[in-house]
Image (cartoon, rainbow, N blue to C red; front, side, top):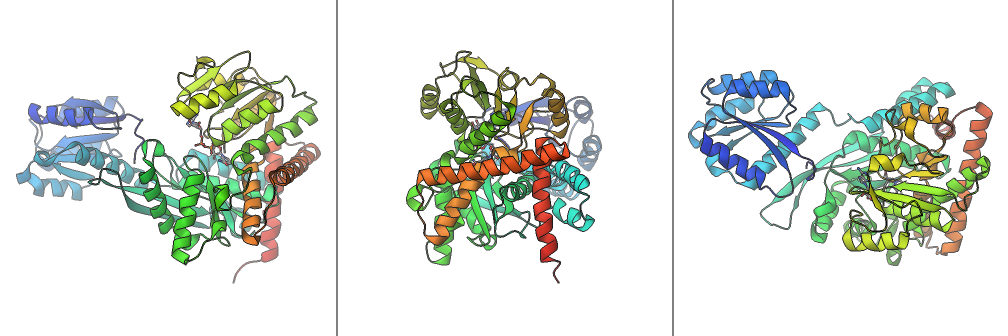
Length: 551
Ligand code: NAD
């Protein structure tokens, strides 16, 4: 499904004014999905438009004043080789429309049978098909993860067989499945993924993400980072990741539950407490984990809490898991401040993203004595030079879901927020936020990456020139998987640890991983990201070489 909040540009080539008005009306009033429609009446005008403006999808009538039948399709296709074309046809012209589909059009729609659902769904699926054809692996995130890995492999002079093996995930499953929206007439088909990057180290472990832009490439990148994260903390797991390409923000609870249960059923053969253990990531939470656990347990016939972590405490979840990623990040910031001789009491912080990671990190940074100047989410940010009242901000978000309009501070755009002068900057939302374009304007002392992959390699070099100390994602946000490991150990052995015990173990794991990384960075004169990657890749390589090659 395409993101409901992203405008899809539609070129409508239709000479009949009544039909054109009808189609435009359907798209203008379609629920959720904004469409920007450009309407023209001839093939020549259509071709002209394609040459001068970006078009996501073409709606094409084949019989036009200046072009007839299949020739119309061929002319338009020649000017839009990659763009999905949906044919608009009358009931008596369906043979012609079928020929156009044979020639490469994505779909055909009979004009007299159109309604908004049929039309918008056809557009969504056409866009999906084009994406699948272009290659699910195409992803800036995967390119970033692979570039980082190749840099580490080069520095380690890694055995080439191991290098090739680790560059792509070991197992990838792509599923497409239907799930019923609340409006029972509508059944949406969506794409889901589960990727296991490496099964050498033990069971695989990784989150599930529900996001409208998710693809196999992104999931693979996240699975690879998870391998490095587990290796850096010396946890007995390989990396995995999964998710569904949907925007869950407007889903009802029932829809979210049906989607989750069906997705779990689709990936059932790959997961299990000794195979592959799931956890929350963007767009998923404790409740989603409870549904995954229940679906898995129903299939095997007994309760299996350890198939997921990050589940509610009453179902065997671990106290402290909800805050663990943010807490681990604050522990890592404390270690960084120690080596930089920076006093955290009275220092300032800025946090991008106010979800699970960002809101915990902001609250715990404040608890550690920092003044949190600004926070943001997808709706924008708020800034208060005197420091935000985070309890009031959290209360506002609990009531309004988003930060927009929160009176605790002045509105600030996400891009400006990243450039605020501060001691500690925490990107805790999306990937690719700090790039060569803005890295020169980042004015923090410590960049602690709550999100996965928020910084590009080119930006890393600029940050190093500006003396920004980067605590890389595989260290800064590893608190989540560390606490998940504690939850899994408790689940598989029926242990019950207290919150204090868990937080103490978490602090130790993060501090030790930080110390190993920092020592390597000092010894080999490397930045922290490269040092962390070398530690991880080294460990995984030793394990691979010891296990040998089967058969
Ligand atoms: P979440 O869904 O709970 O929160 C995401 C936050 O980012 C929300 O506040 C959302 O509004 C905001 N956001 C989305 N798009 C944005 C944009 N374009 N600009 C600014 N803000 C935007 O997700 P989360 O679990 O907090 O995950 C955030 C990041 O941390 C992701 O990169 C995830 O992979 C990473 N991470 C999460 C965990 C975990 O335990 N949840 C662990 C390790 C890493």
